[in-house]
Image (tube, rainbow, N blue to C red; front, side):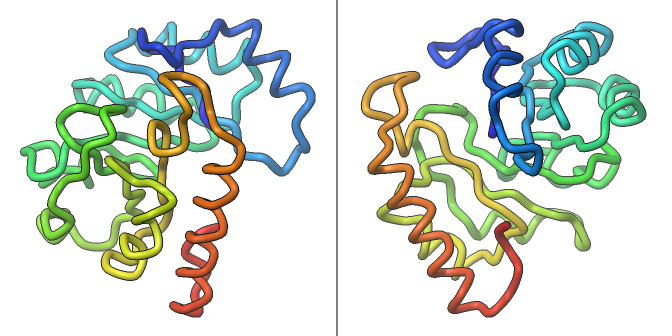
Length: 185
């Protein structure tokens, strides 16, 4: 479950995130989403909100990403599909690389064939324009390690729709069953 700390309609205060984290089952992976935030601040918020991981969704330099990854249990680095950062994604040293379009949160899909430009051997999380209507096709076509959704399951910016969320999860699990693999937990 992701908590957005970067400026956006989805932004949440660290104290509110902590209140939610305290009520979640312990096996839920909680991740803070940051964009171009100083590593010290990322770590401070991650600790205070008791998050299990962080997602760095900006133009963070490799050194800043590595500073954060050394201090957290789980790190995700977001890159733009087809970008130089995507082609060098293995240099960040994160657990997962999230591939998105150039406008995160816009609901716009990118050309999934751009995933072929990524270095081999990475855990890839697919993002960008996913919805209950296309997540099954996305998983079957790209076989990512995981998928990420935000606007595709919203009623309005920042307001999630429970029905769309259930449909998304059902479609993703259906694709996983077809592949017969543990692609999505």
